[in-house]
Length: 439
Ligand code: PHE
Image (cartoon, rainbow, N blue to C red; front, side, top):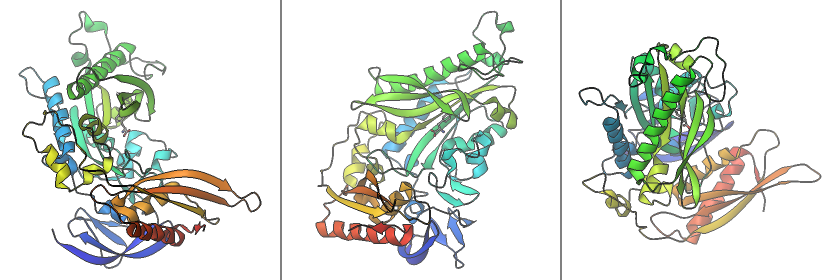
């Protein structure tokens, strides 16, 4: 892969900052005018809404989930194998088709509108997603492809890929992670095939009302059959991956695109970890996709969470490591082999605080600061902790204090390096976010 040094304009809020970057030419380049961005070989115009950062751009196209021997790839393959085995037709052929190579660049319509996400839903905000421009973003979930695949006539499919969310910084959160999303659609004949005297069982109910248990248009029996199959498939998957001693529980949830909806949580290191969301698909989505005569279930699960639990990986940044000390531990012939990650070594942490007055003339979101820290600190930053907010009693100015914990996964950071990065973070925050760093 070739690389090149070039200037690029990083846009944070209303400010444009000129930064010198080194990047591989295969992922992204900006064209001469500066108003366009080429990402995965396609040109996109950028606008006031653009908030994708260079750090993120450099990772689009890495495709960890299909990198040979990568832990995320092992777990992807194990999940696919489970679905192939569990759902097959009369002659034993798998019925789920698998798509793990779909571009993560989607329209606002795909990511939100097609899934009935309300226009004012918080998940659409600029502070939550990476927008390429007003109409285009890096998908925030693989559910974004649901409508397209159903419209193409598919009834059972898995979509696997990278998803992007602006988020906190800690051991378990990273702005890119990987998901497996699934859809299964059934006709009445398929759903009730093993039920005796099933001729009076229906998928739909006219003049029904929505309750906690079902959508207005669905019959209770169809919903319950689907719920049973869905939950069985998913607990079966969890047990196949983790063994039957695994402790897990179902929690009711809300998603705009399913009802009823649930989350599956697994018990990990004294905590309940949410690993997937699922539910009975909103019938409106099936109707809009030309499959109105069927009923469907769907789920989306996070690969990193499962892999951290399965392989004892303590930090989500490790998945991005190129260190052979990490990668070699996953070089196994049999993807079902038990692997427990052994830390290569623990490098010391270094903690530095920063406090600043928030701008008075424009909006500020902590996620803006987190992205800036990632841009400058890269993978040297392990965690950013929001410590407190202070409102000046007279001036009413607001100040935030954060602790930044520096630790590299692969080497010891010198005090000098940390101090330089920390200073640069403060300086850049002043320039780009209009904050005033306090002494
Ligand atoms: N898209 C949801 C998420 O990312 C998960 C989900 C998928 C929930 C499909 C329900 C159905 O959290």
